[in-house]
Length: 150
Image (cartoon, rainbow, N blue to C red; front, side, top):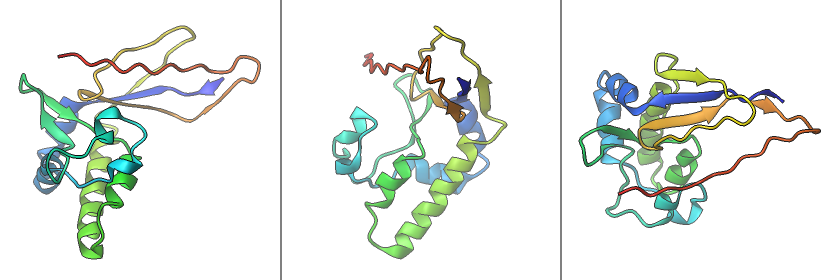
């Protein structure tokens, strides 16, 4: 296989960057409407929002910065806005959040070898990977595990 290097971004570093963009930070803390019926990637988002909007930047019970963001969330959020003017504002804020979350100043690269794994808190670390080509003789195998810790 080629590629597939893990990319990680700390919620603390993202939050620090967002302080320089107060409008984006405020919007991400307030949250966005979303279409729960479209959600396939996270059990928390399959449930209707507690209020009318779902925060993407928040603090956990210990006051630590948390971020819940993935590029595919944008489609789910965008589908919940019917008013084109409101959608344009939301899209602008989401673009600002995306720019911070993918800024080289906050992204770290973690190459993993065969048999290696990592366990991260999805709210304290954003994670992704670079593109990869699978080896047909030894295909890549992924397991996803959801843990709920109180």
